[in-house]
View 1 (cartoon, rainbow, N blue to C red):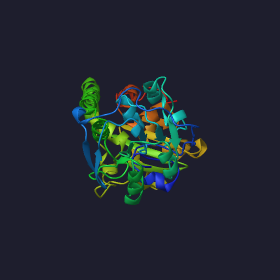
View 2 (spheres, rainbow, N blue to C red; view 1 turned 90 degrees about the vertical axis):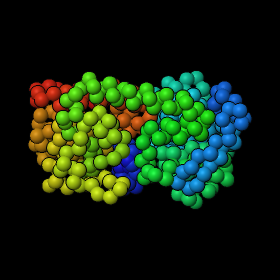
View 3 (cartoon, rainbow, N blue to C red; view 1 turned 135 degrees about the horizontal axis):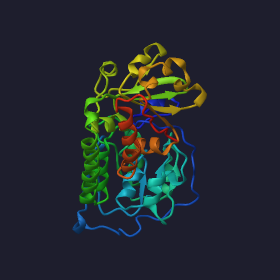
View 4 (cartoon, rainbow, N blue to C red; view 1 turned 60 degrees about the horizontal axis):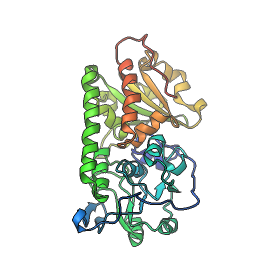
Length: 349
C-alpha cells in the first residue's frame, strides 16, 4: 500500500499512507462554490506567500478563493482550516465529494466538491473548475504533472524532504496552512492534536513497554509496514516495532515488505493492526497459519476492514480524522496489551 497506502494493486502498495483502496469514482455534476467567506487577499494579510516543494517554489499572490486538492487526503486539512475545496481527488471509500464523515461535517451546508479520479490527473476537468490554487501535498506529482497543473493555477506539490505520499500530518497541516494564509490556525491544530497523543500516552504508560505493528492482508498477500500513518500513530503513542519486523526494512524510505506465509512469525507483537483488503474469504486472518500466532490466539490483533470508519480515520491521518482515530484505536490498543488474554478487544466494523 502506499504509505498513504493501499489497495489491491502494486502501484497502491508503493504509495505510502497506511491503508487505502480502490474506492469507486464518484463524479459530481457541477463545480461547487469556494471558501465560503474568506474573500480575496492582499499584501496586508500575509500574501504573497512562497512555498518550496519538490519541484521548485510556488508563489501564491493572494488568499485563494477556489482551491482544488489533488493530494489523496489534502481536502481534510483544507476543510479543517475553514476552506471548502471546489475539487477533490478520490482515494478510497467512494464517499460523496471524496469526503469521509469527519470532512463532510466540516463542510457543513456548503456545496460538495467535484470529485476527480485517483489514478490519472484530469487536467481539463481541473481547469474547468477555475482554481486559483491547486494543492498536492500528499501526492506523488512528477515534474511533468506539476508543470501542467502550474499552467492552470499556482500549485503546491509535495515537499522534497519526504517520499511521495509520505508527508507527516504535522508538515502537511503547516504547509497547507501557509498556502491558505492560515499559518497560526494550522499551528494551533498541530499543537492540539499532539497534546491528544501525549495525553493518551500518559494515560496508558504500558504502551511504552509494548511492541506494535501494522500489516495488511490484500487478497491473501501479507504486507508489513514501517512508515505511514498507522506506524507513526503507534510510535507517537509510545509503541516500538518488534525487532524481527524492524530488521526487514532498509533504505531511507523503508518501503513496505511482503511476507510469505512461512514468515508470518514476523507479525508477532504485543499489538497488531491488520488492515483487511480484497475478498474477506481470501484474507490471511481466515487462515489457520495466522490464527496460530500467539498474538492472534491471545486476542492482541485488531482487524480493520478497508471501509471501516476507523481504518479511514487512521489512513487519512488529518487534523479532522486523527481525533476519531485516537478515540477508536487507543481503547482497543489498551485492551490488547493489558496482559490478560481473556480481555476481548472490540471488533472494528
